[in-house]
Image (cartoon, rainbow, N blue to C red):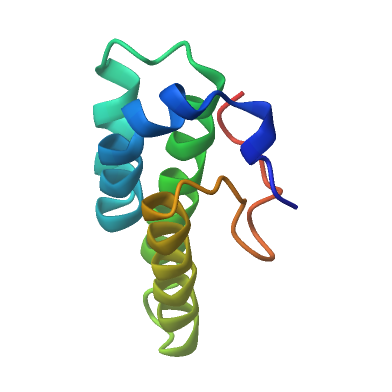
Length: 100
């Protein structure tokens, strides 16, 4: 499900760096977005939620080998989408909304 058309291109460009932080650092990137000046933006909340899902998934499921690898693949997909200016939720877990 591509959500790119729901946001302005300017907003997508402005949030690329914070979005990348969310996908790379998980909950730390989420914290950076939530204390920043864009925290009320729907797109910022989307990226913060994605980072939080990755962070929680890694912490809760770190005792297995398969799940962190899958989460890494999801994070890489998020990074590629962000760099290309595409807004898409992660497969399987992207529909879970923790931050609304």
